[in-house]
Image 1: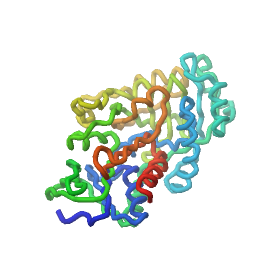
Image 2: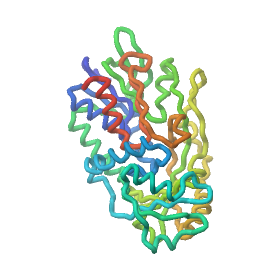
Image 3: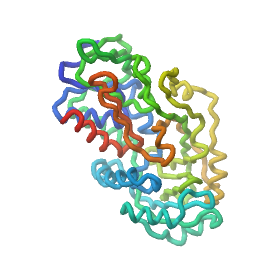
Image 4: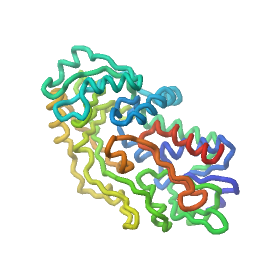
Length: 373
């Protein structure tokens, strides 16, 4: 392996959307940037394995701050990535009962408070629901993104920005002696590189680099999740449905495959665990590699059909398995703040994570303030 970096430079560890966006951001502000990705391709993990929803605030009636941040980020993300956005479908939010955590009145008041457009849904969609389990159906404005197109756009952008991209390259450990260093390993060998900043943007593996480097673990919760990809009945082909909040499931267009994603609050998570300081680190990939995973699709469909009977006609195509990571404090209100730990136990080593793609604007703003860029 050749020399990676001159001085006054940054290494971004992680080749998901956050890592790519941050790398471009830093390069655009005059830094020499290298990005390393463990897998052979960019944006193959959590950036791909999600509902592909461009959030507009509706999801967070129990966290006003998250909802308002989504409202601010939505138009910016849609404009910046217009070529990756699918907007030609109708989106409906349905308020479930009797186990819902918000009522229809509360949800509408919440939407008015954050300025999210909402109105009574047309009669045809209201006729599809079970009135014993759905209090109201509301039309919303929310889009989806094509992860394959987004990957192409971001790959082109980081290359144009002069970022050195290294795939199939593992960040082994980070440390500090005469300066900040990072050990890397790829199929050709290993080397120690030095930089002014190392940004850990590895999402569910954010504690792995800290753990192997002997640094303190950040408390995080992880879930091994199953996102089902399904073919929906013709009537729902250009429709996205989300049932709130308590009895929660969602069926959204998944543009990169031409299917719909299907997730369920009860059945999408299969295994959960926590990263706890002073305890042995658990690598979620060990669960993901387990070939004995069993799909919960039949349970998802059975429960969802109680609310919208037509969903019983969905045809299962496949499942995407991935580790979802959240801050433990988000469990109480479903909030999605960014995690930013600047100079995390080592000067120049920064840990950063977001719960959804449009959090990236908050993330780069936080980095810009910290580095005074």
